[in-house]
Length: 240
Length: 264
Ligand SMILES: Nc1ncnc2c1ncn2[C@@H]1O[C@H](COP(=O)(O)OP(=O)(O)OP(=O)(O)O)[C@@H](O)[C@H]1O
Ligand SMILES: [Mg+2]
Image (cartoon, rainbow over the protein chains, first blue to last red):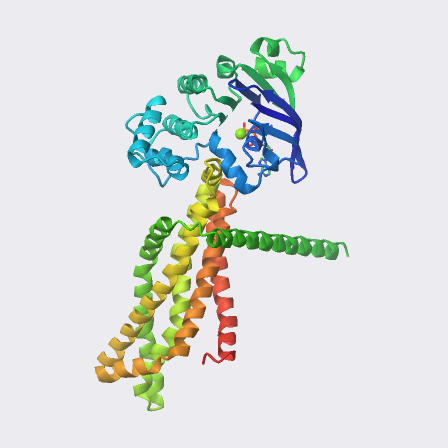
C-alpha cells in the first residue's frame, strides 16, 4: 500500500532523510518512532506530497506521488487523511463546519446528508454535541479527536497521524491511541502514526520503524525490536 | 581589505535574498492570477472578506477624511485669503482630495487596519498548519484563502476611497460654508465644476495600484511566514511597513506618469 524507497531530503544542506525505505501493507497500522527532530514529520509529509524528496520513490496505493502535479496532488489527497501534530483545525470554523468542509468541497451530498455524516463521525470519536463549538473552546484532546474525525470523513484509504498523543496526559494518550487503532481497523485504512511515546506505540502497532539520523535503524514487531542488536534502539527502548 | 570583502559579501547575500524573495512573491502573484483566470473565484468568501475589511477600515477612513477635508479648508482659507481668492477653497479641497489625498490616505489607513488583519490571519494559519491542512484536504489554499482576500482588497479600497472623498468634501464644506461664509450653493457648484474626468482617472489608477500592492504584500507576507507566534508578529509588521513604503513610492511614480500622459 505504502512503499517508500531510497528517499533522501535535505534542507539548506542539512541532511534530514538519508535513503529511507519502508513498506506498509494494506490495512496495517505502522508506527514510526524516533527522537525529536529526526525527521518523522518530514517523512510523513512526503507521503502526502506536501514535501518533495531530493531523491527516491514514494508509492501510495499504486500512485507514484512524486510524479504528480500540484493539481493532481489535490485530487490524490482526497483519499488520504492527515492528522497534524498541532491539529490544524480551521479556527474560523466550528467543529461541525470543519468536518463538513471537505464534504462540501468534494461531494454532491445534500446539506442534510452532510449534517448526518458529520454527526456520525463526531460520534465515532466520542465527540457528539460539539458541532457548534469553535476549536478554541475545546481542550487539546477534544481538538485531536475532532481533527481525527475530519481526517477520516472522506472515507480515507490511508491515514497519517503526526504525534497524535503529544501534549496529552497519559490517560488521554492511551484513549487516543486506542481510538486510532479501532478506527483504523474498523475502516480498514492503512495507517502510519509517528510518536516518541513507546508504550502506546507497541500497544497499537502491527509493526514499528525506528528512525535515527535519517535512516531506518530497526523495524518489526515489539519482540523483534527488543531483540535488535542496534545500540540506539536498545537505548531508545530502555529510556521509556 | 578583509572588512571590505566581508562587507561586499554581506551586501551580496542581502541582495541575493531580496531578489529571491521578489521572485517568490512574483510566482505567488502568478498563482493568484491563474486561479482568477481559471474562474475559480469563491465569491461567497470574497463577500465575507469584503465585509470584514470594509467594516475594519470604514470608521477610521471617514474620521481621517472628515478631519483632513476640514484642515485643508482651514489652511486653504488662510492661503487663499492672502491672494484674495477665498472662493477657490472649494476647488482646492475637492481637487486635492480626489487626485491625491483620498487615495493615498485611504491606502495608508487600509494597510494599517485591513492589511495588517490579512497578514496576521494568513500568518497564523500558516504557522498553525491550517494552510498545509487545506492542501491535505484536497483544496488549493491560494484559491480558498488568498484569492478571496486579494479580490476583497481590490473591491473594498475603491469603495473606501469614494467614501473618503465624499466625507473629505463634507469636512471642507463645513469649514468653507460654516466658517469662511461661502454660500452653500456656490460651494457645492464650485466643487462639482472643479472635479473633471482626468481627476477621477488620476485617483482611480492610483487606488487600483495601491489595492493590488497592499493585497499582494500582505497576503504574500502572511503566507510565507515561519517561526511560530514571533513569526506572525514579524510578518505583520513587515507587511504593513512594506505596504506603506510601496504606497508612498509608487504614488510618486504614478503621479509623474499620470501627469505625463495628460491626466492633468
Ligand atoms: N520546511 C523545513 N525547512 C527547513 N528545515 C526543516 C523543515 N522542516 C523540517 N526541517 C528540519 O528537519 C528536521 C526534522 O524535523 P521534523 O519536524 O520532521 O522532526 P520530528 O521527528 O517530527 O520531531 P518531533 O518529534 O519534535 O515532531 C529538523 O531538524 C527541522 O529543523
Ligand atoms: Mg514532528
